[in-house]
View: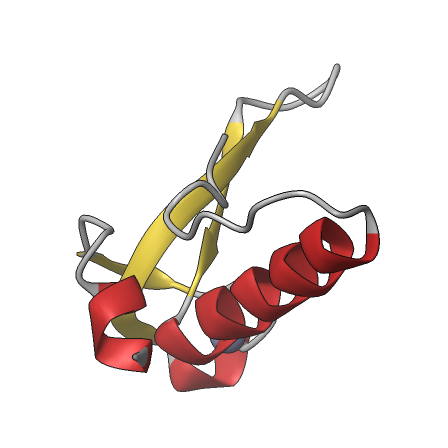
Length: 75
Ligand SMILES: [Zn+2]
């Protein structure tokens, strides 16, 4: 199940913003920040964080009576 969710995403090497201590690992870009005074910054998450975000989306969808569809954390 987890591996099915992970396979929905395109993984590229990067640093997870929640786990910078992992240094470079497989990541997915979930968001681009546009700070006023510095260049755009990509927020990337590791596998563990992606599954955590999917779990939150799932709980929210179920709570709202919606159908949960994995693979859309980055949108
Ligand atoms: Zn992480």
